[in-house]
Length: 345
Picture 1 (cartoon, rainbow, N blue to C red):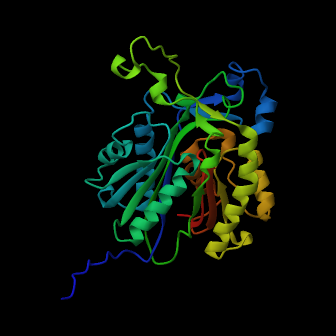
Picture 2: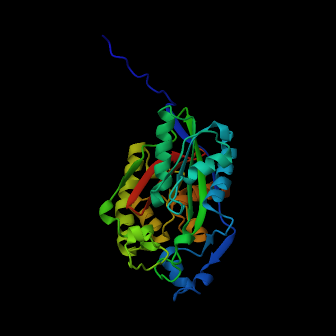
Picture 3: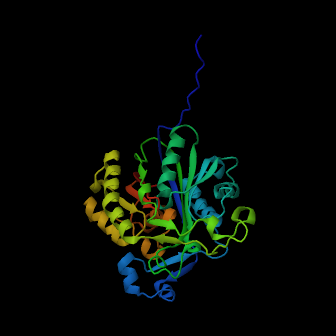
């Protein structure tokens, strides 16, 4: 007797980014304001990071609100309706509610019907991870269009007294619509992790040690030091890892896509640090003619949001153009990384 077989799902042969959108909070925090919190100088901050200012969200600029604004622009650029979206993926480390996923609220607000929606936590590589998942969903026949959002309110996790991180982080949201394509629009994703370095970028304390638990959990008389968690980073190990190891990952993404550096129309790395970007350019032997995203100067490090925000800015400014090939790479806490060559929308 022949055993029954599952009918295979069939999807598009290829996928690509159809639209991108971003949201930047209204409030601008210049270096001069940061200097009210820490003993430093504008020159030191610019030299160390390349940052002149960053955006911090106000009370009404929640993770959900910023995501909806960015997603609306991406949907409009893609020329589709929210009802056509078959999946919503939100990459964030700063949605502070454990459950439910903020993606479900965003999907509801946008009018995505019953589309599956979920959050992922991959820090600064989150957008790349989401892009890889969306590509698989589309080519696997599980969705026609997928909304990928990178969004952060890192100001909520910034210790303004920490001289090593107070000037780095910013807030914002970037979104992309990924859908079917007749030609390859997303190259092989080179992604991975190195958990042996999990402590070099981390939250200072877990939520269960930041707040009092019931006596049944804590035990009678047990005291806790209640202090809001913040982000901490050991800069030197992160810098070395990003410069040496991530340049290799970026080259692997180029090789996997069959593209050489001189064929790129843009290089869009995670906006972590201008010095890291410059070192990667040198390691990749990137021609001077290839435009490079330097959004960090005005936006700061927005973690999962940084690549789509930088992509939107390059397209709007004319630095990069629709149809150009772009090398993207994200890397951060975990440690985690993700790189690919994509066709710009």
